Amino acid sequence: MPTATREAIVPEFLPTEGSRPVEWLISDTPVPYEEAMAFMESRVTAIADGTAAELVWLLEHPPLYTAGTSARREDLLTPDRFPVHDAGRGGQYTYHGPGQRVAYVMLDLKRRRPDVRAFVAALEAWVIGTLWQHHIRGERREDRVGVWVRRPDKGADREDKIAAIGIRVRKWVTFHGISLNVDPDLEHFSGIVPCGVQQHGVTSLVDLGLPVTMPEVDSILRQEFEVIFGATHSVAG
Image 1 (cartoon, rainbow, N blue to C red):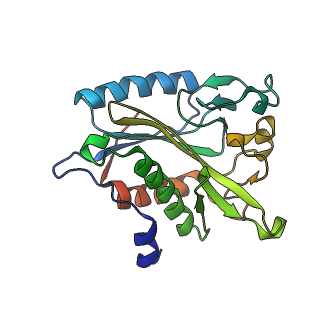
Image 2 (tube, one colour):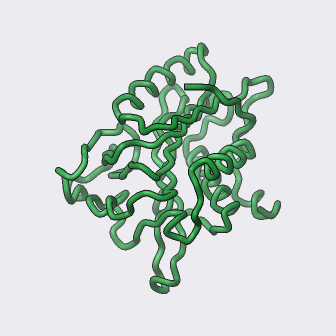
Image 3 (cartoon, rainbow, N blue to C red):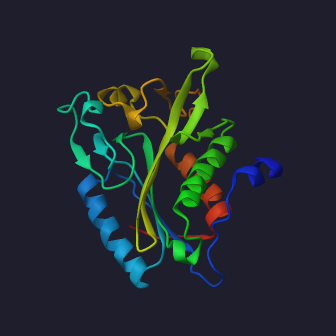
């Protein structure tokens, strides 16, 4: 990515000097949603207490829908299709499933920048940088969280969502995070109004013509994460 473009979109979110690298964990098999939530709750408490390092956890879930704190019941179009979980994060309904890279981001904003809006912008910038490395122009929108791709092939004003963002913060420690569509079954999104937005669609890297693998995406995600948030250290699950 050209330096000028990177500087224009990347907020400063590096940790204070002397902080430990962020631990980087990848799960190779789908993780049940309840198991992931329990793990995050425990880890966020430990980070806030100073007994655990910050962590980014990359995983996939079995097919499911999650409801954020602003979810509207009428946006759940097929409630019996997949399990529905109350997520406790901000936002509305979201789909998770195989082929989608979920990144749960557990960072201590006291060591970085205690600004939730700026943190969301940093997550958007992380996704945008990752897409740029795949030759895709991702864009943010002031009136809707997430990352969007223009689709002139489907209409002059058509935009598709390629990544969702939803976070929660406790004692200035973040959890939940992003979900980037690599190669999920896009038809599964039809059971909800994704993030409450009806007038736009959903896409993925493969849908846009990029036959990438999840490990390839993970490598770029890590590279772009370190630009914004600092060094990482691989850990085993």
